[in-house]
Structures are given as C-alpha cells and as structure tokens.
Image (cartoon, rainbow, N blue to C red; front, side, top):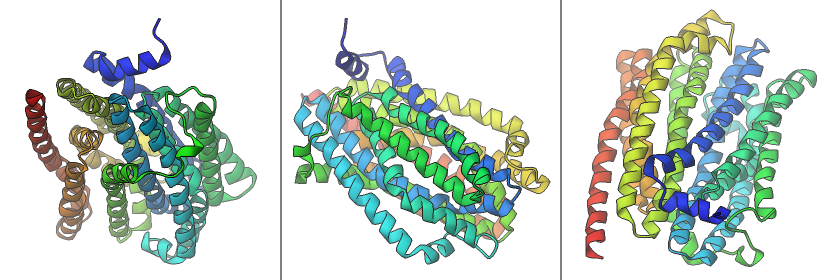
Length: 453
C-alpha cells in the first residue's frame, strides 16, 4: 500500500487531470465555504441587533481584513509556489527552508500591520468611507481586527503552505474549527456580553487564533511532508527572491481589490449608508461564488508548480484545461441560483425592505462576473505556480487599475448607481480574453522548451 507521501505525490504527478483537480480543489472549496460562513456569521448576528449602521460598519471595515489577507498571500503564495517546484525537483531541504522562512516573515509582517494600523487608526477609518453614523462602529471593529493580525495572517499563510505539499485536508481543518467556534462566540460576545460590533470582531480574532493553532499542530505532530526547523529561520537571498518575486504580484491583486472595494464603498455611501449595507450583504452572498473559483485556482496551483519543477508541460496543459472547464461550469450553475433566489438570500441577513430590494438588485448585477472570473483566476494562479509572476502582475494591473476602477468612476458618473454595478462584470469579461491570450503565449513557450529537451 502507498504511504501518505506516495499518495500526495501521485495526485500531483500522475493522477487523471479532472480527478486530480477535483481531489485538490473540492476539499479546499469546502474549507473556503466555511470561511464564507465565518464572514456571514458576523453579518447575520450583527443583523439581529437591528442596527443597519453596524452592518454598514462591518462592510466598511472589510478592506482592512483584505489587506491582512493580501500580505499573508504575498508570503503564502510566493512560498508555496517555490515549495511545490522544489518538491517537483526533489529538493526537500530547500523546500523546508522556504517553509520555515515563510513563518518568520509572517510574524514580522503581522507585527508591522498591527503597529502601523493602530497608530493611524482614525485617518484609516475615515479613508474607508465611514461617516457620522458609522465612524465609531467601524473604528471599534477595525481596532480589534488589527490587534489580532498575527492570527489572521498566520491562518491564511499556513493554509497555503499545507496546500503546497498536497495536504489539502489539513489546510481546511483549521478553517472548519475556527468557523464552528465563531458561530458559538458571536452570540456570546455580541449579545450576552453586550459588546455589539466589537464583540463580533473579538469572536473573529479568537476563532482565527484557534484555527491557526490547529494548523500548526499538524507540523508539530509530524504529519506533514515538510517540517519547519529552527536552523532555517533566517531565509536565504534565493528564498527571499523567490517568495517576493511570486508573492508581490499575488498580494497586489488583493491590495488593489481592497482599494477598488474602498472606492466602491465611497461611491455607494453617496447614495445612502443603507446602500452600503445592501451592497455589503450582496457582496458577501456573492463571495460563495468567489471562493469556489479561488478554491479551484488554489487547488490546481500546487499541481502546476510540481509539474513545472518536474519539467512536464504536457500534464500542465491537461490540468489547465480540466480546471478551466470545471470552474466555468460550476460558476454558471451558481449564477443561475443567484438569479432565482437573490431576494431570499438577502432576506436572511436583514428585515429592512429597502435593504433587501437594493441588495437583490446588486446581487443580480454582480453575478455576471461568475462565468468569466474563474478563468481569470486560474490563469493568474498558473503563472504564479510556474514562477512567472510578471504575467500575473500584468493581469492584476490591467484588471484593477486600467479597467475596473476607471470604469467604476466613469459608469457611476454617467449612469449612476446601475452604471457602477456593471463595471465589474464588464472588467471580468474583458480580462478573461486578455488572460487566455497571455496564457496561450506562455504555453507555446513551454512547448518549445519541451521540444528542446
């Protein structure tokens, strides 16, 4: 019988493409669905307070969480890409050095985020778009989230590192435990201890801390292929270069998304603060679809990285084809569900008729990103897996700075609220074509590399 290492390597190297994509992605999608629940739990319980301004504040504070995720993605994605390639080229010591260095960098970065965020807390809250009715609530929520940055960032980074070696089930266990805990802690802190929105933030951070701890137990229990070691705490120049070469474009995607989210909120608040509430609920409901495509993209990334390191471009092409077809079909099904059930999904989180009406309208516009965005993400993650972040950076730059934010401002000015809602679907449709052209170009180069061997 194959041992655990053999099974994980077999999935990366030889298993049938569709089966490999499903095996690596579905557990991760399930884990990400749990993360969606983690986010929606806060929204649900704060909604029970009957205070729509607290609901708006959670939405306004969301970019702060996204910044923490972006920085952890920088380390997690960069390190996991290099680790997968090292495993593929049978360089285990270098892979373990990269793993340990990723933990060191995560601790340093989380401390910097906490200190900088708390020092500039008031101007940060203003920048997020908080006004008179939402400023204090947003400030309370953000201060707690910043204080617990090490747990949020550690949880995300560790998940990526576990996936890089094929340990997908381990990576999602921490997410599941954290979410279950959050479901129990939210009503305790929000209602029983009467902490309101601040209680929701405390529950989130404590849940992330426990989830992070559970993930670390797999390394401590020697259940993983790779293990961190004290002798590898200081990264080499090569490891730093590889982590940041791939990781910076990955983090820019999330950082620029956060910037776009902030621009979006600042435009929406001009219509009303309840519009921000409605958009926040709709975007969080839509996040189920977002995490599905992210799950497929993240699940295929280690396979791509391994086979790039093993110099097997034929399998890379097959994995890409299987991944794109699977994610596109899944997202179309989800889009149809949103189209039919939009008002009922928004109604779960609020009793306000106005918020339900606006939220359903928003959801039925934003859902049109789904047939396109999965392919964009798959292409971008494939570039990162191959250690070719210049293409991932190009996708990010065009997507957010050249298309989405300018379109958001232009369509809002010309067509008002409905116009700004169409900015993202238009952007993703264009980016699907751009991403496929870039990917086709790279595949041709890989084919030439294969023929020259």
